[in-house]
Length: 498
Image (cartoon, rainbow, N blue to C red; front, side, top):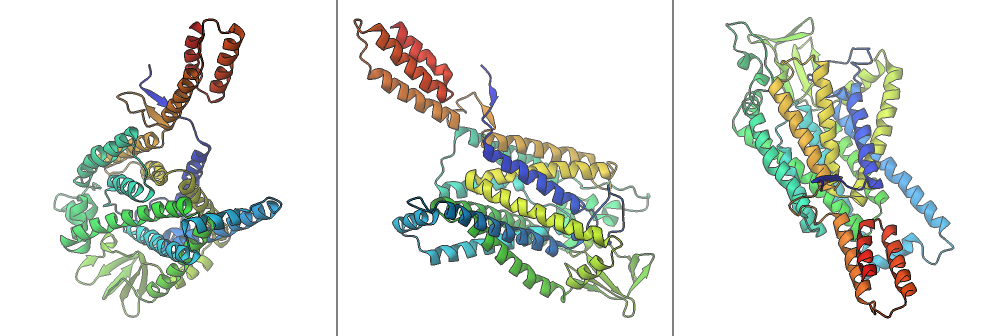
């Protein structure tokens, strides 16, 4: 008997593949995980291509939300076209939803307000996550996210957790969490310095994440703040996912409505924030001189950009001031129209929008037809390949990432992918009663119980007509074969032998 098997590949798992592929393309257009983003894109080679979108986080988010808005409008058109085709039927989709809403006591106004609030939380989460990623370090213990998702799933969706899913919780929330603690205590990079230099002072990434945060932000208290921001980020995202699924499943809210709300709300938030950060710099350094694109602070030497929170720079030679912006509308417009590859940037921007359209579509379908935890599979797949490609592009240099960091991080991603595949039942554990709560096992038990009930209702009389007995067993066999439970035909054979 096999201890491990593979479950049925649901057609809805295709949406996970779509999400992984299009998210990977977006990562490529963003230049993957750029180590420094204080420079303008100058490389014209295909392998090192990075769009100006890689340097403008708010514009990337705008494309994401605009893709959600367009996805919602397209689904709305399809939704109402299907309704027109069903006009001859007794009930249309809208009428069915109205009847269901009236029976459940659902009001459109409260539903709209609820969708707006959750869309606002989700929009803030996207912007918040982009901001954390723009700081070019990861202090989030993402392995604990599965606990919060499952807690919300049980609490809001009233879903029972099976034995195989408990294994997933153990792998992610305990085993891999322990590995992540080890990773956080190791230095992120390793530079070569002369004997009189201290690399850990010169390059703050040569320290572990806790010392890095202290040096970057200037205090131990920021460690707790950053860790809280990452945990808060997980909580906002997971809460939004679970509540969206709740609205779709329990309140019959159409997918297009949620997508439209996310798009409109997110675009408005981006526009408001962009108007603020365009005019308000993150930091201003006085008495700065520039020499061969290297900036020096008078009396202190070369400016270490890795200690800055924001990455778009503007140097005023007249006042000798260096401005740091999180994003800037005027700089984006200038970069776009003054790029030597403006036509290419137009094409890339359109391609980036199309990718975000399909990302939003696949995410909405995963939430509607699968489980919120299935959304996390995409994250681990993309981080695994993104990190590997970036590591290779940097010639496996420890100035980018130490060997220990790379191996342990990739190890975590692989195990997380396996764990999520166990959770969504693509991998089945068939030992220690771990397969008891699998959908296939539940279906099998249902067929067995039905079969036993049918057999118990048959009067097994020795004088019974042999033809009748054969016909009865044949009929039961055919029903079992149709449901792909051929092995239970043995029970019919046992009946025949009686």
